[in-house]
Length: 509
Image (cartoon, rainbow, N blue to C red):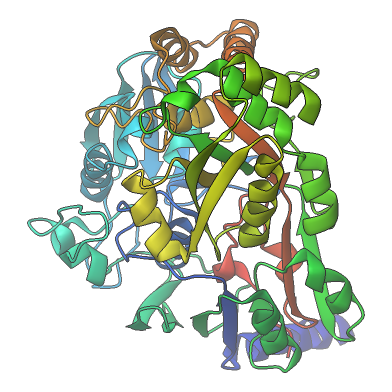
């Protein structure tokens, strides 16, 4: 009898916690530029997608795939994977989710300027029945499941006929949303706030998430964002500046979670804009003049890892002996050999609210380059403005951070190293305008190579060529730090891709 009473009390407590209306106030450094999940391949877009949509599958904290709108999958042959879809799921419009929505979504992704390079491997998607699809690839692909984590099914009946994708444009999809996710968009004030309410018909009844309302507020300044948390105005913030981490650690009732990540920060040197950058000696001199270790130590306070290559040590392309090298004397010698002993002046752009201490890092790099005679005219911009300029390649040198979408080296290579090709989407973020067709051939082969050893050799071969060519300037792999009130269990829902699963967040009363 006592056992029954205890069980009843536990159930009552659980129901009470789920019943209490809870509001979660989040402050980020920026908000998504659009409600269209396919307009921009960016962190803020994907964070928003995890709130209002659901992926077919997602990564869990252990680096394994977790079923979401796809309940299971199986390989039919070397070019085909069958996905079995979840039943009894509805979009926020009330429309029923089915295979037709997944087919529609993948076809739309193949048309997206930002996503098409990732999805060009898919030949076609066939409906087997209302809740089963077969994904056929053009060639064998070792990363198909990785790619499917970026399929957030859209409501075909809601979007079709008014679903054009225009970057930074005014479209139906950029202003309206219908997803199957844990939250429904209630109100959006662009650049000011976004309010979401819990989806009362959400399919995941096993989720412990109990935030009934989420308020997202972009706060650009690091110190102001932390102050909002310390004053109780918000419950959860990201990012936390390295300068503020020690301060936050000393405050009672505040928790911090830090994870290493595979996000690489780098500089592009535009070879079409500047003939100087066409000379490998100049590119190597710039790499040698930038002291990554000093930037990490003094500006980022150790919350990053200096990088001498693009691939992190978690990726197959990583090469042990490619370490960052700082040598001003050698850089000056290379500048002289290239005929630029007196240096030259360049323009540089960087964001000032996108990456951790990005403006300060850009200022430090400008000072370092001055030591080898390169005068930098630096301009920093808020994220929303910066990436418009980035897409236009508006400066000689531009900063970029990239989290591999597939948790694999080749995603880095195909988006930021491959020859730019608007038709395929390859090189979509290659602001260096660097182009080596033989590297593109290796990238294509790595995207279809199923033998792990041969694939490792291919990816390391690409990484070595990029290093020898000094194609870009790798800076560091950025750590991720979140802070929250003590009763907000963020440790359970954050991850090294920085797509917090807010729908599963439990807030203690």
